[in-house]
Amino acid sequence: MSKLADLVEQHTEELAALDGADAGKLVLLGKIIDIPAATQMLRYYAGAADKIHGEVLRVSGKYQGYTLKEPVGVVGVIIPWNFPTMMFFLKVSPALAAGCTVVVKPAEQTPLSALYYAHLAKLAGVPDGVINVVPGFGPTAGAALTSHMDVDSVAFTGSTEVGRLIMESAARSNLKMVSLELGGKSPLIVFDDADVDMAVNLSRLAIFYNKGEVCVAGSRVYVQEGIYDEFVKKAVEAAQNWKVGDPFDVTTNMGPQVDKDQFERVLKYIEHGKSEGATLLTGGKPAADKGYYIEPTIFVDVTEDMKIAQEEIFGPVMSLMKFRSVDEVIEKANCTKYGLAAGIVTKSLDIANRVSRSVRAGTVWVNCYYAFDPDAPFGGYKMSGFGRDQGLAAMDKYLQVKSVITALPDSPWY
Image (cartoon, rainbow, N blue to C red; front, top):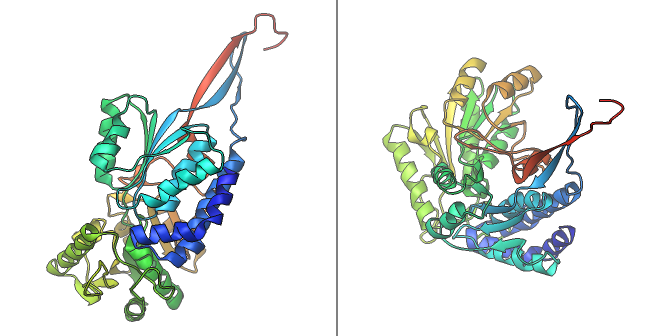
């Protein structure tokens, strides 16, 4: 695994270019964020591989008891197209550390880097059959993987709708273990005491980074009434300064949506926002005559019952809303079927503690956003799924716990 991490590092240029060509991701950020995060993940779990321990049990009677943690077996990994590299190693790294073999089905939109990683794994000396990459479409390749009787576990990141289908398939086949990291509609909550400029920059990053194609994108921004007007003005200016263009251009802030389907889906949600009564402040249309580019978009006058406030858009669309009190914003933040992440911007430790413990989300960022680390478990509440990626807890879904009880009839003590 460490050797594979070294090889990935050595091929950063090619890998970033593959994800840029496949997904419209910014090549510069691929080189300084995605690829380094992948190698960090690999090395973290390489270090964890020899630290998987069972326990000695205090069983009653004339027995000795202990547990073993054993690899679950063959793991099917199905990953999305928004972060092809990071998602590959988010799933594969802990599975390998646990001693499992993996069959990876990359998204049909972005198979190239996954195939390259399989090539590098072979160069690193990973035995044949340990890392397998099978490109294909969900209804064929994905369905074959989730229903296969010799696959022991499935780890999936993607939409809630497909997550349901995977659970059904697992139940109908061999009741294989399933872990799901699904959609999100994450709130970013900005309180009156926040530094407005910092909060505006954070909110721009939270929704427009990676074209809004992020499961934890801060798509619902709640701003307390005391700074709301100032925040709105500066947020619009910040969005208009977010450069949309060629992902291979180092001056670009945002590339195109991944494909025509996603491009049209985002524009459709923008039309829903306008027709339901939200006010469009900026953006809202294609950013070029050709290609799948969309302008950074901000809506105000959004209510919790609107589609743009409830459904995951997966695009550069911010719903900007006002609130008065802590109690009110906690209720609004939790007014969603999802629970993947949330952000809080405040100088008050009391507010940060209260809100972070009240929002039902798997990750809460305070005065930051997208602060991921291999040691920090990541996953969702509610319809954002179950199971955790990252951290030592991630290996649990790739391990079985076996109890071993041995009779000790002549032991001098029990």
